Length: 56
Image (cartoon, rainbow, N blue to C red):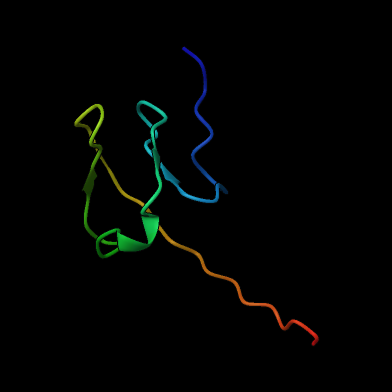
């Protein structure tokens, strides 16, 4: 079985099937489980947001 890169990605990725969740900003509360629309398995996703100052 191939490893699925599901940490440190731009969008949430199902760790079971590898499907990328393009609308990751709409994910549920981080303490709840998400259900993959492709494989139907449950997983938890954590969102980490960083902000940078952009010089004009």
